[in-house]
Amino acid sequence: MCDTKFLVDSMSGKLARWLRILGCDTEYVDPSEGDSLILRLSTSRILVTRDRELVKRAINHGIRVVSVPERLEEALAILSASEGVRLKIEPKKSRCPFCNTKLNLVRRAHVVKGLPREVLRSHIKFLVCTSCGNVFWFGTHYWNMLRTLSEVKKKKGSLRFSGGPVMTGDGNDS
Ligand SMILES: [Zn+2]
Image (cartoon, rainbow, N blue to C red; front, side):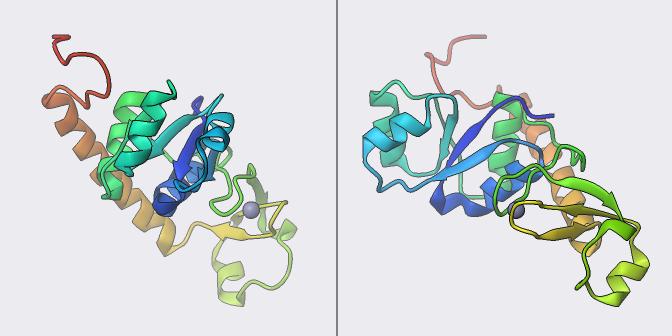
C-alpha cells in the first residue's frame, strides 16, 4: 500500500513508472512549467525531482519536495526511507505505469485477445488497465523488477546506516 501521492518531474519517467507499479498515485510535471501550475498540482502531492532549480523553486513556495539522484535504485531507496514507499509489488494495488489508473488483477479467461499465444499459455493471472488497455503479466520483466527491488532494499539499509537522507532541518537531529 502507498499512502503518499507524488508529483514527479517529467525527466524521471522511469521513477514515476516504478512508483505507480508500487501502488503510489503518481503524476508528472514538466519542470519548465510555470510555478502556478506546479503549486496547483502539488497541493496534495509530494514533489520528487532531480532538477536542482525546481527544488529551489519548490522550497521558495513552501512545497514539500524530495530531491533524488538520477540512479533509480538510489531514488527509490530514498523515497522508501523518507516517505515510507513499500518496496514490494502488490499486484492488487499496482497502478498502470503508463496512465496511473489502478490495475485489475484478472484470470486468463478475462484477458482480451491479442496477446502472444505463448504468453497466454504460460500465465494464469494478468493485470489489465481499464483506461489505456495495456495488459501486464508476470514474465521476465517482473522477475527483473524483483531483483531491482532487492537492490533497492540493500541501498535503503546503507542509507539508514549513514543516518538517512536529510531533506530539511539542520541535520543535528541525532
Ligand atoms: Zn493504463
